[in-house]
Image 1 (tube, one colour):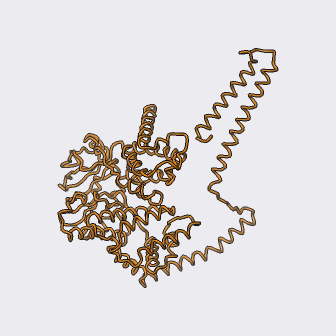
Image 2 (cartoon, rainbow, N blue to C red):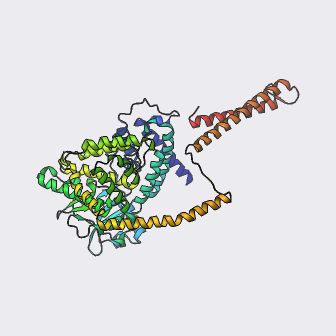
Image 3 (cartoon, helix red, strand yellow):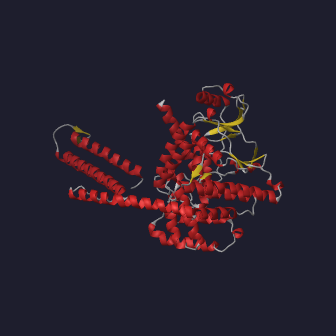
Length: 544
């Protein structure tokens, strides 16, 4: 069984190498590191096509990369956002096995009707129309039988590939591949838990209860597990399938406004938002409402996040551009401290390019694209919740522009931002914040004497320690250890060769082999073995 697993892994590695070579990344397999001078004008397209050919797990990894403007250049993001997670459906027999394993019932026992042909299929699961015993029409999302095992296998391969890329692929220096693979692993393992998606759906349904613009399907928990998700069926047309060319302009504008207004409500009022407003995840229902589906990716903003966003808006509105880097740092955005002045200068340049312009004159897509370029150029690091927010707003802007090309997302967002500012600076809110800050300061003041006492005790007892961290010192020590070990082995080899030569020349008595003393022959053989071992280690490291 272990041999079969090893054989499958070897076969998969071979396939990855073959595909990488076909798409111009063959130098990954070389011992040398790719040079800076190699052409990379079409690297985004080649990377997208390579991931697409490698299969669903790699496609989803590419989709993750497309949400990371802090580590991926804009030209790569544009290409990776074209990736589609479409795969062939699994047979109905596999679906039946999953349903029986999760519910303890056959499909016939659990549902009055269950359509064999899925209405959608992706890398992790597929969706079927069905009818519950109470005659309610639902959709059932069924996880593929071997999805978890295949994903774990691909994650191990991706981790190995990330290590190789870090050492040898100059053209992929724009990302920390290992860190991204780890983040991808955490993200996709969450997607494997359908109960988490069900909880997200419940939250959205509760938030939009009574809202006449948006419909969120109900979760049927009796028919929902970690590998099975059952929701009310929403009858309507996907935004991607609407024949918008036949719509009058006022209807298209109204749809774009409703779409944007719904997401602004999620972000500014609910602080819990759908992370993927893709046209495939939004329905135009028969009653005119928008229907939301696919709740696997959701973002949440804390009350502190909203307060800090408010300060950012206030500074932007009052032309206090110099404070913007500090406001971004408060939000968890990380940037090299030695480039703070450069960041301030770039922000001022971007700010005054649009300051004073009417919102109707600003191209939202271009403004977002310039923001992404700034994020990457300055090597900013965004917290995950803001990465999801960035993706949601960028996708929303693109979808709204497709629905109505002259639509401006910022015009819808403006009243929400104003309301957020007014609420955050209302007398009641200010009083609550002041009381909380006074309590925090009082707790700090009470802790100071105890902390000083502890420090003095440690100083008196000689237990006070000061730790200095240097991120590069561990790698340096490792490389020094390797170098010293190689020098030691080389000296042993040299000593063996010299000693064997002397014995061969001076020793005349005792057993001989090939005209040399036997001890001399043994010394030469051992020195040769050690020499080959040393050369093999050097070649494996890729550094001569």
